[in-house]
Image 1 (tube, one colour):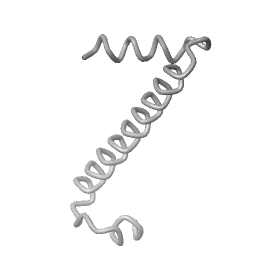
Image 2: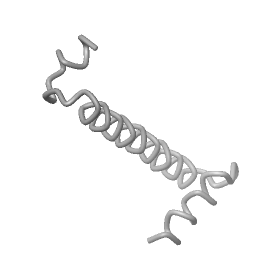
Image 3: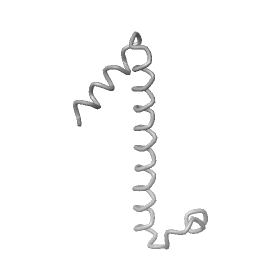
Image 4: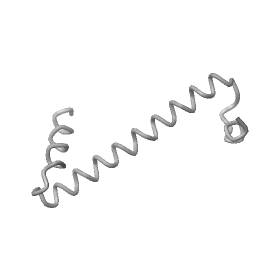
Amino acid sequence: MMQKIYLKKRIAWNPGAGITNKKAIAWETLGKIVLVLLTLLVAMVILMLITQKGFGLLDFLSL
C-alpha cells in the first residue's frame, strides 16, 4: 500500500508522465482534501470536548 502511494507521488512529480501524471495529481489532491477534512473533524471534536457542548452547528457559531 505504502509503495503504491510512493509510486503515485513519484509519477506526480514527473512532468513528462502524461495522462498517468494527471491521474496521480488527482489522487494526491483528493488525499490532501481528505487530510484537511479529517483535521477539521479532529479539531471540532477537541473543541467539543473543551466546551462540553453538543455537536450542533449553532454551538460552534455562538462560540
